[in-house]
Image 1 (cartoon, rainbow, N blue to C red):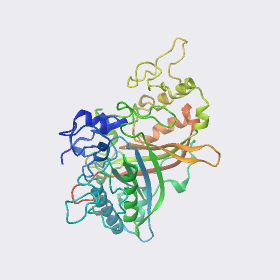
Image 2: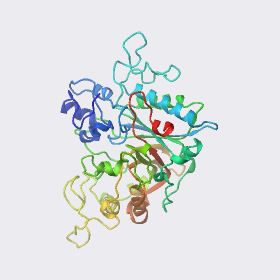
Image 3: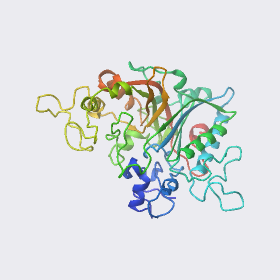
Image 4: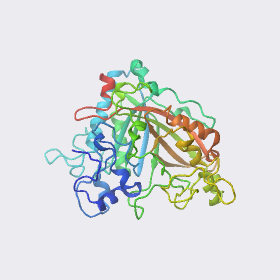
Length: 435
């Protein structure tokens, strides 16, 4: 199967927009020959609800899926710890089981539930002990599963000599209120799909496949707008009602790959070994939004805190959502159009020595907390080739001068090395575990 930097052959623009939904068609077809984040549809036919189920993302490729493509409607972030006695060989067997299962679950074809003796379906290759038929009637629904390794994984498998320097512990930040039980982990899995049952099915399959090798350390569940929920593709909104993600690096940027992915052969500058070629580093943060406090602000005040209009995401310096932010713009009253502590100013690459990262987040809502306020916010996932040049400098700046920070609480954190993808018959992490 060929991956291209354009709409897949036979995929009409109308169908592409229907599949992309709120995430945007431009983001849907990025990744090129890397095999990352390219959603496809099984047939070219008029847009209908069924197109959500038929869209699929290839599992195999030089880069893992679930990094560059737009975040799906449903997400599960899960960390596992190896059980006592599980060694490098056991970890390799687990990654092979996981990779084989995901290869099957993401494969397009006949309806799930097709049984042996008929044409092969997506579920046929799953051992019966894994497959509970939760997603019996659904297509792949843009399912992606992404695997990563935490710092502790290397010590527990005797691989400390292959630990990337870029996987050094994140520094402490003044605004952190981290729960260690919901942070870090030996292994990390990101699941995304545009159907909740498809995503849950993948989660259950991976949990069952991990038995006797690894147990769940923590799990977080998130969501985004469903594809097709808006009249046209557009940037999504977070739970504060703000359009979120406008200034993300774009695959068309000349330095996109350099910022997001480890180059071939690894990177001496970041301490990334050769087995990380084509990979990236994921910073995962559970960020609770103090929504009751935020909602007490007027819309005008919320806009000043962010630096953008709430209605359309345009910067307060003028223009439309995609107009570059003018940090030097002064209003008629002589004050900066974008306040000195506005989020877009403090987070801008221009304010951080050019530091940037690719944000691919899910919102979450876990009911009402013990304090009577919504336990809701953002499952923040940031991708970069080197966390010390991406997330760390930006978060340090935000920690000290972002007006939005008083409405946020960072409650969990993790950093994971996400290796490149795999080819036919291979498994994710094979270059690390068998190199």
